Amino acid sequence: MNKSIPIRKQTGLSLIELLIAMLIGVFLLAGIASSYVSSKKTSRDTNELSQIEDNGRIALETIRDVIQHAGFTPNSDASLEAFILNPADVTSVACRDGNPSVLDATLFTQERVTSDHDATGDSLAVTYYGNNNLFTDCLGRVLPPACQLTNAPGTTNNNEAAKIYNSFFVLDGKLSCAGSRTSSTSIIADGVENIQYLYGVDTDGDNFIDKYLNATKLNNLALVNTDIWNTITSIQVAILIRSLKPVKKTAESKTYTLLDTTVTSASDKYKREVFTTTIRLRNLL
Image 1: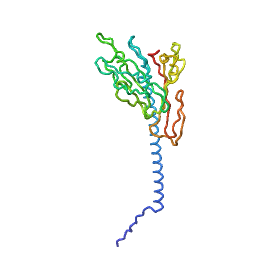
Image 2: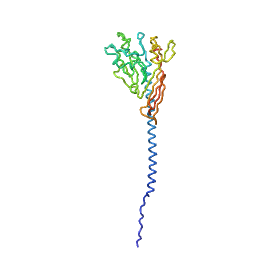
Image 3: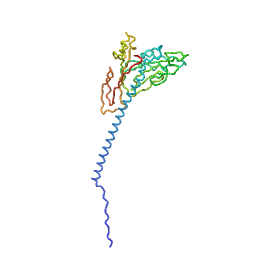
Image 4: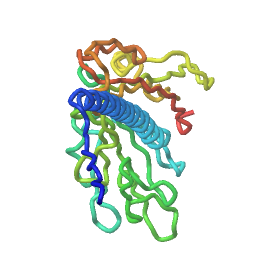
């Protein structure tokens, strides 16, 4: 006789086992999601802090590279005022080829010459002569050879045509620059909320700073000492940089010290840092 082989029935997970498995899965997914969110936030915050550092470095380096040339005069017969104090100081004349030395003098408004401001900080504008060694403005635009100072035989120097003008100012949260060889302003660094300058005055001519003053105090002293702006041998710069995206957990308002000025930020979640430097004006020593 053939013996029948019993068929074993398949058994699955019980409802309780299935619920336990689902619960464990939920906890695992929650842990993975939490780790991902935390990692993403850390990465975002790190990127924002790096961006602050980059913007601060770029802003100060660009300002330093231009400002240190203030008052540069390659020829003994060429003299000029290093600082632009009035828009009328910016003049465009014809170069040796008949083209204008300044493309758009209207860029240098009263708000963009050397002066103090309240909301966004100070503006600073300087000038220097261009020759075959120094021939660009703050945006890297070139002063044509026909405008540059030269001692080449058969040429006539035009000191006014050789002047290169530069202005730094804050506009719409960005450090901007106007140069004499451009027809529009350009952005140097983003996230800039305020900038302050102090001018080191050497009143006794010993090449040591006697005191640092802002532009307003210097202009007041200029009423009795018309040569006061020519005694400046260094400039202190402080700039307040803000992150481009909010990174703090809670909104807060903080006060920052920029040289002789205090700035109170809005109550928000943005990270801010202050960057400072001192620039020696070697051409005015």
